[in-house]
Image (cartoon, rainbow, N blue to C red; front, top):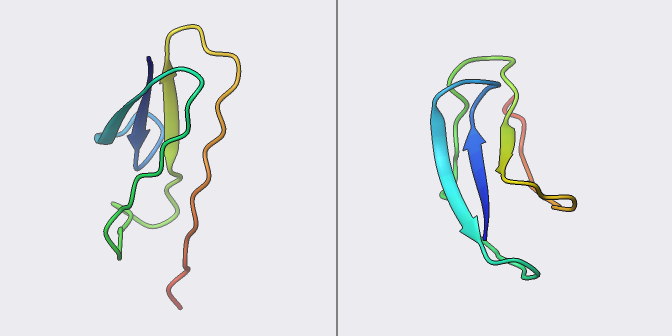
Length: 64
């Protein structure tokens, strides 16, 4: 398994932890709106273990 840790900023508090089986695809619905902890933070995904290829897709809407 591969562990993905999703954070609302680099080194920030953990938002979600996903454990994904190797060589598989996973779709995780997230409630809307998903709000950032503070302005200008970046979402971060950290991988656990020696993983060489993981693709993460996230769609966002900027509030004006």
